[in-house]
Amino acid sequence: YGVLVMSSSMGDEVSLEAPSIRAGFFTAALTEGLAGKADFNNDGVIHLHELDAWTTRRVQEMTSGQQNPVTGRPPSFQT
Image 1 (cartoon, rainbow, N blue to C red):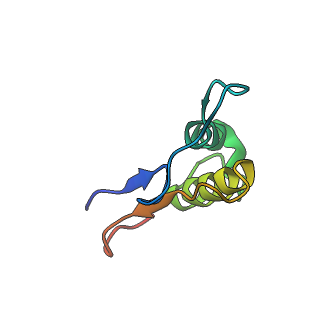
Image 2 (cartoon, rainbow, N blue to C red):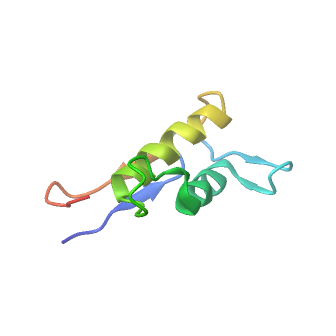
């Protein structure tokens, strides 16, 4: 048991937005992942480790590395 926190950027960064997608890059990536793009093993379930990996990679891709999401979880947290 515990709390998992997905943050849109590191503490010394700003979270970027784009008028073209009418959202922040983190929100857009998270939404894409939840819509199915994060289902890497195609089992029909979005697991937390898949969503975390997708969101991080996608945000870095969309921002050319200017924004780097970070996820914090307790050591006992099972994904």
